[in-house]
Length: 167
Image 1 (cartoon, rainbow, N blue to C red):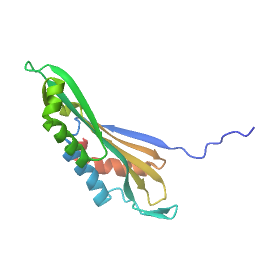
Image 2: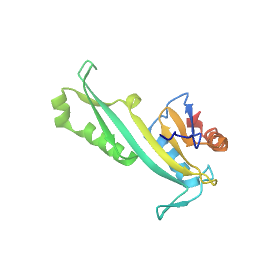
Image 3: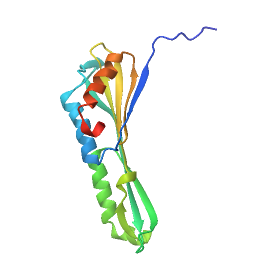
């Protein structure tokens, strides 16, 4: 029987944020800035006959959390809703907050639990060397995965150092 032979040495690096990203607007602006300005110097490529930008969204999700509180501010119920993008996230959260029948059924007033909401967006990046890697943003960390060349980590780290919300 044949043995598996290691052909690459991919790495993962994580930057834990000192303070979680404050809100979905700040989060979305950081991601959009990477897509618009390509600070990592990525290049477009063709895969399976399809043209790809040097940096593009690979996947994302946003989770809103709404608590229902009674007159004594005790939580009597909770709803979480997962949305596919930041715009849908805000629309879904506003819809749940405005649903009076739902609040009545839950037995309390709807209140956003901003501290327990989560956001995640993974970007697929193509280094000029041809190496594909991923940069994943969440509220409390930035993660680089599937990279081999330390220059990739250095480039992402240098950019992140210029973004106050990623300290």
